[in-house]
Length: 74
Ligand SMILES: [Zn+2]
Image 1 (cartoon, rainbow, N blue to C red):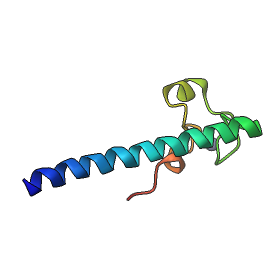
Image 2: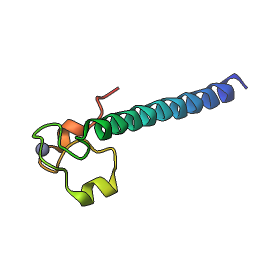
Image 3: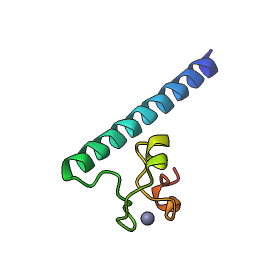
């Protein structure tokens, strides 16, 4: 019983963390739109490829700098 509750709790926490991550991403995109630099690579400032943005609207780097857009390891 306690084990089952623990699993449910872990799952809930994971969902919560993912939701917070999503909110962070949305907030970042909104600020970029506000500042007029949405769709620019944070590493080189070049426009991010349209196909890359449509695949992941929250991507922050062009294809040349994919390692910089990865989330830090937990
Ligand atoms: Zn770049």
